Image (cartoon, rainbow, N blue to C red):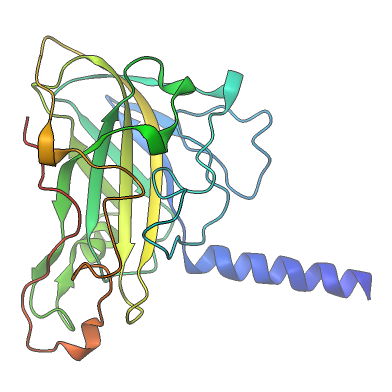
Length: 244
């Protein structure tokens, strides 16, 4: 009986893992950085990525862990940061991503000091890239997440060239909207040390908190795409993209 229960639990976990996912690694200036390994203890892990515990989505836009996923904790002595010159590219790689409907968003946050000791939910986040409905209708069109899948489950982002040097979080977020009126948020955060001679910093309406940036009533969050076969626009949630 015990063996049967264990096998059932493992099968359920495997099914959940196969259904969803997250960022597993990063490529920065020719170097590969492995992400955190969910479903494993954080003890002994070393990564530039903050902890995230399962492949399951966050489904509440006001969830306390929306900034860097559950639980978004520092790895302590195992927590690393990647040095990235402003203006360079960062490529994030997911598992075999199963959801083709929804936008891709990329945010950053200035830690105002060491990111390892920063609390993600207390920071001000700004969006550096977004991509949503690429062509066709909301119900049957091509989406950014489909493009991510076609690009070997990866997404490449450029760190703004004018960004002021310092320690930052880089936050990739997939918002999957294939289930009617039930958004699925998949955020993961990595720690960066941005170098360069820039001096630009976003302010005002470009800055948001997580949670706080989204609400279920946002047209791009609480949405039934299948009821809109003749709608050809989609409003990506969150602030405008900061160009630097």
